[in-house]
Length: 186
Image (cartoon, rainbow, N blue to C red; front, side, top):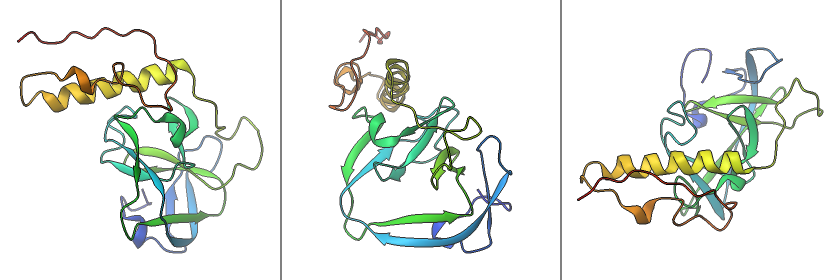
């Protein structure tokens, strides 16, 4: 999100101002440069809507160490994998990661989601700090994943319990509390 609206990352350049969603810093951060880095390896797909408030608006492909803000805290996106709404995939051939270089550390808006850019200067409370994933966040992602799975199945009129995260959590997910969701009867 630039000062003039949404733009594709590949079209950004030095001097463009990006909306910063990080508490305690200026509302905009100046882009110093853009690096396009050929990347081969695991990527994380974050499905549209899983981060709440309809964020991201479209699926995001992120590197596993990228920081993402969810429920007011920053997390390593690779730690949020549930295997359904946040899942690891192999990068497609000729995949290019885009590194946005800013004047300082910031959370910037990408498709309505807040992503970390840069390194935090200190552990000060003025900056977002990455925190470990806990059972509350894991449960929230599971609920969002279940909702996405049910909405995807709404077109067929049938829920697919095998797609629900509490029945098939990803290997990286922490144990979930028992969840019971109402399923339509055939």
